[in-house]
Image (cartoon, rainbow, N blue to C red):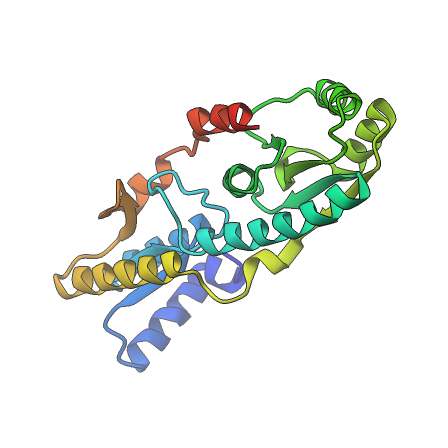
Length: 248
C-alpha cells in the first residue's frame, strides 16, 4: 500500500521478475487491507500468496483479532494504569489519545480493562457536554479524578480538553501515546496467534491454495477469499461498548 511503484502495472511486473529470479514459490503477506490488495495483485500475476492480518487497529471485519492488536492494547493499558496513579494523587482528569483511525477497538478494550470512566470511539456518537457535566457532578461527590480514552478518529483532543475543562472546572491533562503503541515485545496472545496464523498460511500454500487470507473466529483459525474478506464492513461490538458504561 505504501509502495507507489507496486501500484503500477510496470512495478508489479518488476516484482514478479524478482520473485522468479529468487526462486520464491509462495508469498505470505502480513498487513491490513492495503497489503491484502497487494497480495491479491500478486495472485493475479500467478504468484501463490496468502494474507495474514497484521494491524494494531483490529479494523478487519472478517477476523475477531488481528496480529499486534493485543500487544497494542496492553501497551495502552500499561499507560492508563500509570496515569491513574498520577491523576488520583493530583485530582486531575486524564485524556488519553490512542490509535485506531476509523476503528475504536483499541480505545474500547483498553478503556474497559483499565477502568476508564469514558471511552470515545468514532463508531458511536457522544455528548461531550454531558460528559463534562457528569465529571462536574462526580467532583462534587468527592471523586476528583477520571480517565477519558479517546480513539484518534473520534475527535480532536485539544477541543475536547478545552470543553471539559471549561464546563466541568476540572484540570484536564492530555496524553497522546502515538507510535509507542506500535512497538515493544509482543504479548503471549499475539505470539500464539502469529504461530497459528503462520502455520495455517504455510499449510494453504503447500495445498496449492492462493488468494486467501487467514483469520480467527470463535478461537478457530479460518481462511477465506481475499475479495470476500475485503468486502466485509467492520462494526464495533455495541454490547461490549454498552458494558463499559455499566462497569464505570
